[in-house]
Image (cartoon, rainbow, N blue to C red; front, side, top):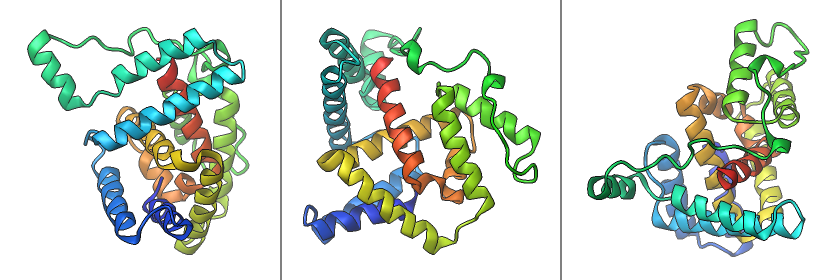
Length: 243
């Protein structure tokens, strides 16, 4: 999510009467600071919001038959452990020794799993001038690292390619950010900020493993596109819920 999208989200909340202007300004300052300092741990408030979002997401998966209640309970238990702040984990390590990696041996459900090799992401490039072979290889590796299924990756890749062929100016990106904010509010309601925080956390983790992801999303406007933002949030919920 870009700074424009953060501003748009806050403005929408003020217009809807769910947030005061002063609170919105504080939220913007905090979110922009977090965006520019990816190593900073989530605040207790952000962690609580993310926990609430994951609980609602698990309930939705159970009600839709995609998970059993036992699977949801296990996933939430894992999430609560993963969501502990780095500072807390460091304190635990000093007292109790090394903290076990909660992601070790993690497996997504087969239906959401990535292919075995990055090269299996077979993307169509509409214009060879838009992306080099090296850049395509980097994109394939990013999707593999993100554990994204081919179908989701194809949708995101196609959207990024469309944006690359029709570059947007700041006004266009701002307009799209407002549209995205409105759509997210319709989907997530009061949990919108927590959902965005979850997606941002996923992007920042991915950017650490494959530098350049965050800059690509911010500079191209892709980080404000409704399709991409929604897919990242939903995939982040699956990944963190299944680890």
